[in-house]
Image (tube, rainbow, N blue to C red; front, side):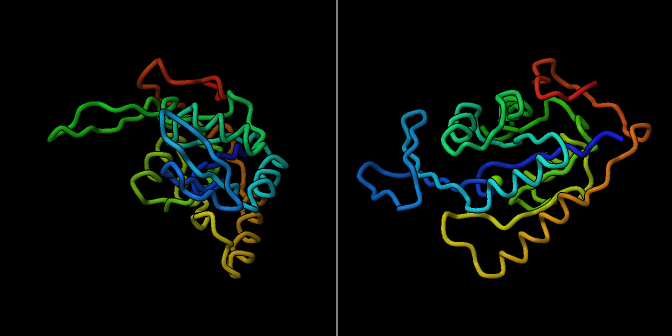
Length: 200
Ligand SMILES: [Mg+2]
């Protein structure tokens, strides 16, 4: 059986970022990051490296985020998160927008069901819009989605210690899906980034 792949969200899961104004005081636990003319104050979640280490003990580990590739790569480097560039699935690698009603837009997936033998760790709930899109992209049910408390750059509450222990346990215990039960992926757009080692 193939090992379970781990997908980990970036914002409010591994780091916390806040859009800042020029002159804002930089909090002690933050670094200043600049993208597209904006200034961000970003903090590494204290348990981020522990979480990633547990994921990497038992299988390939990738980032799955709605943040841009430039932002994701820069935070990966700044905080030494350890992802190879091809292990990062940023916004433009798995979804795209088309014009929607009333001048808005609709977000669609470049591919679906790309890695059913995986789990996802994310601060969003599994049934939120973002959570549902990521689950559809990976092809995983709610049981393979591990929600973690949103990290806002402040010290974690006391009860987070137990929550983290339970998350680490679930990462180690997540069962592999037998290869013969895995349905093939569905690719909607050939611009889908397959560099992350997802096999078809
Ligand atoms: Mg998030």
